[in-house]
Amino acid sequence: MVKEIDAKINEIDNEIEKIKSAEILDEAQLYVLKRQKHDLIKMCKNLDPHDKVYLARHKKRPKITDYIDNIFEDFFEQQGDDLGKEDGSIYGGIAMFNGVPVTVIGHRKGNDLSENLKCNFGMPGPEGYRKALRLMKQAEKFGRPIITFIDTPGAYPGLEAETNGQGTAIATNLAKMSALKVPVIAVVTGEGSSGGALAIGVANSVLMMENAVYSILSPEGYATILWKDSTRSDEACEMMKLTAQDLKGFNVIDDIIPEPVGGAHINPKAVYRTVSKYLTRELSKYSKMDENDISKHRYKKFRNIDAEYLKLI
Image 1 (tube, rainbow, N blue to C red):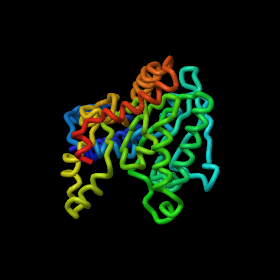
Image 2: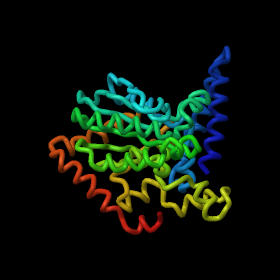
Image 3: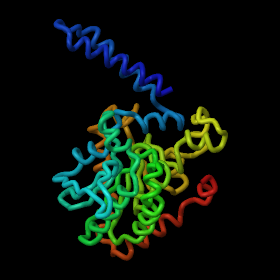
Image 4: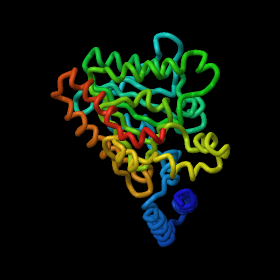
């Protein structure tokens, strides 16, 4: 449903741009088109899981660079894993949040084809996960909270990545993150698939955007494995319990961050304000907590995931 509505909205947006660029502005037609767009957006309620997958992957959905530019101050990017090469699909560094220094790390997909290719469409190799771990260790050393933004179709599955230690890099991140002595807040902003997402998602608080998805693999991959037919991905979405609402019920995530009707890309500024509010609330929970209690809290959180969900994976 949402895909068809989005296509109509794009057509209306193109018509609006034509009217605005004309020598004489047709205000009456402009009003009609804006009203039609408003009515279409209002239809994007009570979404099915496959609708949420579509929105989670929407090309206009806010990316990590957007969140950093609009929520944090004085961001200073850090690159490299001190071993191999720079991986553009993991973006991270130091920033200020409400006057407090924090480390921010997340998946980066890029905003156009050129950036998509440079960032490998948000699919990190082992170098990216080693970079993320380097920044986390640095944050722990200096007592900085860690905030991660998850948005990836999964870790890169290529031969070179596997040869260079993809599995080891992800496993090391899972082990090291579980023992960090500083608070970790993870936000699933788009799609979070497989160990590629979890490798920066072992957090004290795991939040999800209302229309984000979080799962063991993509719906297409799930359908291919289960039925040998990737075209049944919509059916797989229903079975996988990958929505924020499903995962909140299984105690996989801690809270759901609301989005504007129609998705985060409809009103990004409102989304940035909301995410900032939730981050402030979550960080305040751990500000007076002992460092040993912080790691114990994270351990207990993952031990409390509903057993019924574990059966699904």
